Length: 468
View (cartoon, helix red, strand yellow):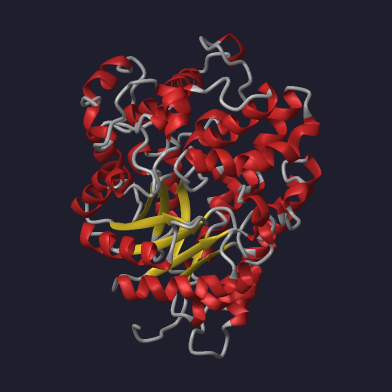
């Protein structure tokens, strides 16, 4: 094992913490006043972009995500900025052509990102190749995140071998992405040791507090030699977010993994965010339902966000009483679908199909388009084969694809540029449009109306819900 050194801390309050607790609704103006203080801490990195922040900026906050990134970069003079990137899906929900992926990486790094954490919902490394190469070409740090999950195929040998392949791909570090809070303490110790055996790359661990074990998981992972952990400043920690930064700093104080971070400085940052937390609680933006421990995560391997989706789908169908049946159906559908990790978009695909199977009273009576695409190989390769009967029912005699799905996609950038030329004000606008065509177009109209002083209630937009 590599020599033990101080434990690095990645602060998530500007991205995953508020994505997990207040549906990604923290505006840029809430972030800017505290950046100077955060920049003095000595974090390994600050995660501040990517994931759902891009969509939420455009759709709900009426902000330009690229402008947010530039403002954050202006403030963080000494700290690396990090983002989350869904491999070939970028920050959207479908695979994009290689030219779009490459251009998005180029512009992310040009506007201020240092570390790109790249993952795929199936852990199909072919879906990460383009993003890793592009990050290396632009001089960024390419971190591949393994979507952690359970199942008899996910052995320590599987993870060790995957770590070896990641290093061979040219990645700079590996992240264990435990999006559901499934990784328990002693398993974390074994997993970190296995990854260290399989690769010489630094290992980072990301988890959520949802199931209540995350702080103990970090402790055992650190003892096993993990290099960096993801934490959130206390007002935006716990629940479906990460363990609290200050607690983890105190835990390792005076040990050979001492983080070296200043508790007084962290206390000032926590004091800054505390009133905003209270506001979010009062307005209902932060629900008390997501602040406790949800042990169902460990029982059914259902991430917190997926659980709330299942509940709302059943509520809409006026079948709330079927939740238990759906929770029991999820692992069965997942098995039929090749045992994928449950993370965007595979969690939505498996969850929706489980709901349909229960509500229809017959399994696979109705099969969603996304389920058919998954079973046709359009999302990539799963760790286990699909259930042949279910696959046959879904796609008939169609031959599933076995190559990298993006190989079937024609270059898209020129066509997209042509489509939005009347609204484009910066190079990056084409990327916003590529990911969310309708939402971005509405935002461009809103931006133009603001710039020209047009009365927003009379502006040429379909969406009249703009803030003043």
